[in-house]
Length: 256
Image 1 (tube, rainbow, N blue to C red):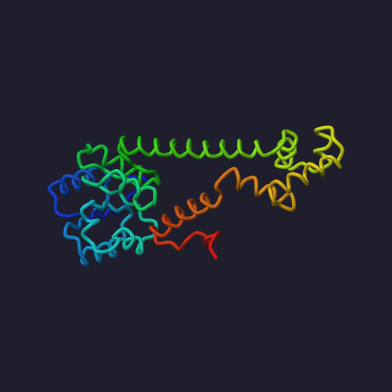
Image 2: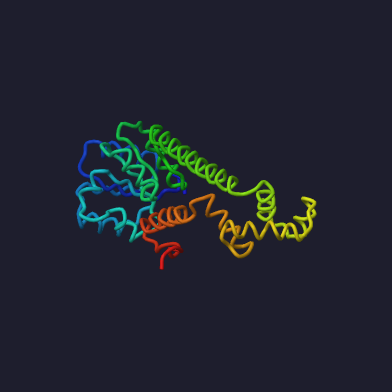
């Protein structure tokens, strides 16, 4: 959906002098029906249900007005409703938390130009995020820092693993990870099958496993904190889906 196909837009806000200006710009540029609710409460939620908008403009002041999670409540009515948050005074940490959890799809500072408001509508209704430059820069920095941290952990774990193994064991382990059978490994490194089997038995003992499958899993567990990564991905996906009114994606594979 683009701004040109946007049909209904709902603005949920507290009374503010900027609202009429925002409404005027959006009506002129988006050619859509706009419903504005500037006195949050039960009547506002009822108007939202009756409107069933394609996009929600949510003023940051409304977040703290309701004694419950207003975004979650609205998404109970429309699971895939895109939300553009606007206002000022929210911390970057809080905004980035909303974005990472999928609770909002964009943020507009009230000081932005009218062109920015129109472009934000087009981007968000097309399924993309809209952020100001400072927030985007921080998202990128955080992503790069996380990547560097993960790379550092993996490099350290690889070094620890190599220290514990002989050069020949490392070589054979790499070939096992490539999926080679015992005979293929023997041909590749010019050893007898019996010698390869002897090295494999030593690898099994060092890694405390009984077979190749267990060894491969053990290697990945030692290289990467698998349990933490699974929980991280699981929690992120579930928070995003729950915020959208959807059930959890998968049961916790590490529970029970």
